[in-house]
Image: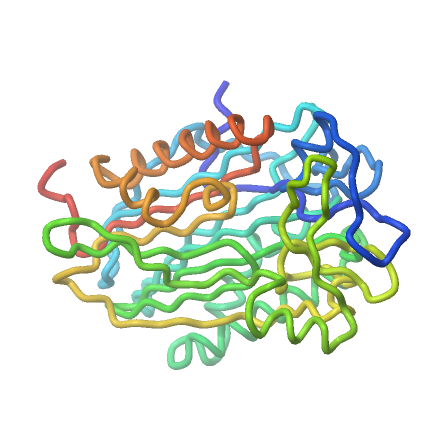
Amino acid sequence: MSETKPHSAVHAENYVADGSNGTKEKKKGGIISKIRRRLTVQGDSENIDGAAASIPKKAAKEPEATEDHYLHLRCAVTEYSGVSKKGHAPYNPRKKNQDALIMADDPATNTLILCVLDGHGEHGDGVSAQFRDQLAMEMMSHPSWGTDIKRAAADAIAKVEHQVIRNFRIDTEFSGTTLSMAIIRGNKLIGVNIGDSRVLLGLEKNGKLVAEEFTHDHKPDSPGEKERILAAGGRVFAVEYDDGIDGPPRVWLGHMDVPGLAMSRSLGDAVAHTAGVISDPEFTEKELDPSSDRVIVVATDGLWEFVDNDETIELLFPTPGPAEAVDCLVKEANARWMQEEQVIDDTTIIVAHLFDYKASEE
């Protein structure tokens, strides 16, 4: 049976193990050391990659393949599709998907919400799931939703995060989630980003489809982000392995080698937030151009880790519709993970066509 499921999610980890010194920590080689560099490797818990549910959920039968959605709102998106696929970790056969997916529309304001969440840590699936279940409704019920999208989104994100932190079933000390969201109202696109998931645009220029990064990843070594972490007393460095290859830059407490978070902004992650990590969303916006804007891609780093922006647009260009584009991108991302790391991260991808793009080909 296929593992591909539209609409839900959960991810692999972004933490590394606790060490005892205050400098770069060398890790021993071996297959487990290698395959877990880009994922979480903190602690020995059997739940580290989401092996056990952190909060009870009602069972719901979901489609096993991507489906196209034809939008009847008066907005730039005419067709979209999304899917979340559980990754593969040979050291954890009971691993759960920790990503989450939101695709919601509001006919009252002709607004479409496309959002991906990438949970990490032992309870990352619980964090991302609570955002999946509550965020869209909180945004749409906000008093400013009709007039101030950014305020409504920021307030709703903060409210749900507060609820997650207060949820006794979810331990957010070392668990959290990213969030990347595209909000389309009419021809206006607003990007909302916390962490290292991403929103990408595909534009037509001189007869070719080209990539334009719409949101920007929050990495610990990014300008501005690193300065804030250092000012809060945190440290930023990558873990060094015996073969000399470093993992990604990570955030650490000033006096202890935890938590090792591979992003500078996240939702949850109480310990990391004492070292300068924040949950403030970063907004980007633009008026979509019917003459050039063709595609929106929203995805977790299960895609972006080994497939860059330009390759993403090149891969989806030959596909006839969003569902086929999503399937193509998931397969390519999974293949590259296996080739590079012998492990597969959870992968969540949404593709939306704008202004009847490729409608005549169907």
